[in-house]
Length: 170
Image (tube, rainbow, N blue to C red; front, top):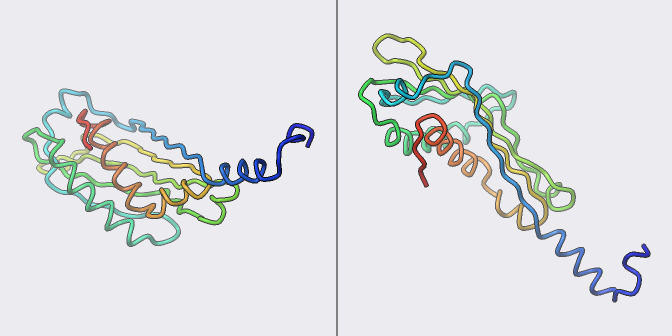
């Protein structure tokens, strides 16, 4: 390693430790399967929320946390007058592997279909696919994602509000 020649061993060790402690990156994406126009979205009031988890491995904690986050945030950002059901079908969930993330990096992911259904008619008003990913490495990244289900559920609910209803929530 000619590049590191001339540096004291403790400096090289410190650089290695720094690499193990840093790095994280988050991303999200939304795609309209059957998008509703803004005038239609503005008339929607979400009055009922349900979540199903359709992954190979059962995730009961994820279902509970995502339902709670959606119920806490979405009714406030859907301010129309036409009652709608919001159903989320989780089809992708990748949990963390702490040991892997510290040494080589890892990612967590939550992906699902979001359906808006008119409560009176049963007609599907809109359908979207949302993914939320968080990749990290090192101790800091692993600590940031120590409660992956909760973090991803919070972010997913915020994305529904921001990208479907046009309301940014914190």
